[in-house]
Length: 328
Image (cartoon, rainbow, N blue to C red; front, side, top):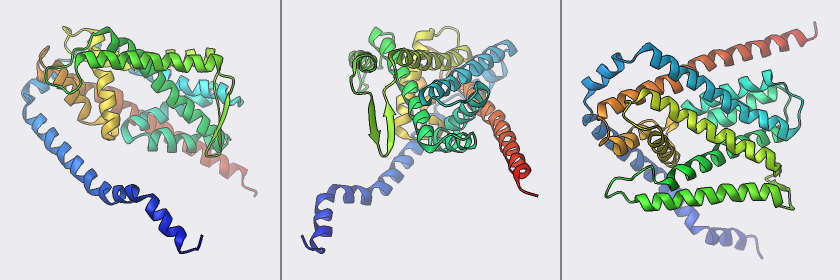
């Protein structure tokens, strides 16, 4: 094959990719413009006086309970990385691991997975002497723990029929139950692979991935499901008391997928839109929005402020250590 033929063949092999690259930016722009329009229409339909009155009526006890559940959720998420420590078999203490998990989670929630889940973990773990390959393993195990835990809890809730989709939605209630069954089967398949698979190692882009033991996989699913349950508990605490917890949990799980699809940091506006769409016939829109605004303040913004201070302290200690090690 001549040198002039090779580029021509490569171009011919990827016409769809070239077309997608050409249209990706304008389509993304149109998507966000449409989203802004939808959120504006959503905001205009809310009785904001009711929202502010509801926020003002929150009891201190309610806010303390929601804050305690938030702290518990962050600790549970940080335990994902404790599993990762066992997975990579590196000598790190829990006092080193937990701050990394908590800081990463807060930045992940507010500033996207690229900033919190990936960049922050790489920076903090590299300071602890963890290799890039092992950091990638910890990150991968954390992602697996989160989403396999999601599959277990979402599969149980969706398949039970506790969440009913509004009439006219593309995804019917029956289809949602089918999705739940598929999620449970996928979770069972993961556990079966961890128990019975004869091949335990794969290499993807130079990173070796080892299939965990069945005991570790069960712990992953339990912790992941527990964290999603705690997130729903925070919202449940802040929403009107007439709503049932399983229903709130189910709506949160649906909104999580909508947030992943839209790729909006913190799912801003998406979470609120899904909750109002699915629960507006149960309680007023204003009370829903008020509870979700309080949830964002307690579960997203407050932890971000706290972990920002934690991160600055970690950076200051690292800088002081570097200065002390410089030859005089």
